[in-house]
Image (cartoon, rainbow, N blue to C red):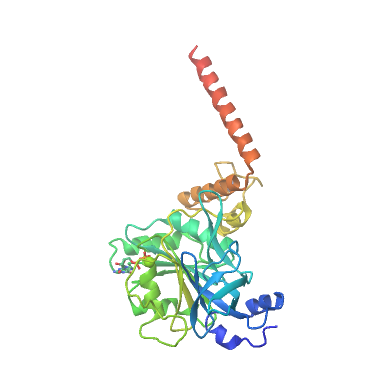
Length: 347
Ligand SMILES: Nc1nc2c(ncn2[C@@H]2O[C@H](COP(=O)(O)OP(=O)(O)O)[C@@H](O)[C@H]2O)c(=O)[nH]1
Ligand SMILES: [Mg+2]
Ligand SMILES: [Zn+2]
């Protein structure tokens, strides 16, 4: 049993009841085992925090997948080294599909994702929709944070475009990431026991926002407050404790981020499209100009296009290699038929 573990202390680094329940489902740990949270991933080691102090830990089994935000059972050996024996199955996990199709976890046990996008040249509503769909498919609440409201020239117009385009259920917060107002606006998501992850492209303002939310000059002996290393480019994902009590996971910029979700859960995140689609005349309406379509013309055309593209991508990812081969054969046959037809026309 884990009776010697101080759950109150662990609460300060994000332990919740749901996780406590999972911990007690694990097989009984050896004497002296400790519970901690991964706050940083390094090349071959992990920074583990036990609520009081941090230490370096390595994996006992090399195949164990460890991500920042994970809760783990670890053991100290006689030489002062700490070994990760087991990972508590995460309640939520944000992951992406790498180009080779492998699943790549980004952050575990996250409540809220701050989707950070600059109102400057970084501005891209389609990319934001993709982020939104993926985060919601992982069961994580999205909050859109539009940075550089203080310097971008079309800041007002661009923020208005996002408000209009996204479903009203998604909070959208334009900020200057350096300001105290940013912290006040995001305060409702920063309570003790909460874990947030910041996602967005490089240069969007994630590390700036992390520093602002973490607050300055806080030395509690807990998770490192803010970023002791000052200005830096984020290389590893790392977890910070903010003044209001929440844990914040900063991430490096995401260049490619393909959904790790099936078409059905992606579609569910476009609830505005789905809500209107119930009123289309045809049940299998593709919103492509069919008569009695309730979607086309009522949803931003670019948003609708993006919705369809995401579904296509997800369907392709779900296909097995045989299905994909079959699909390629079909397309190539169609291509040949098309070529034949145009030859015949010319004759
Ligand atoms: N004026 C202004 N500058 C910002 C804002 N957010 C980020 N920056 C600047 O943009 C640059 C990139 O920010 P950074 O936090 O490193 O982006 P990251 O790659 O997402 O972590 C830095 O020079 C920041 O000072 C903002 O809201 N207003
Ligand atoms: Mg950064
Ligand atoms: Zn329709």
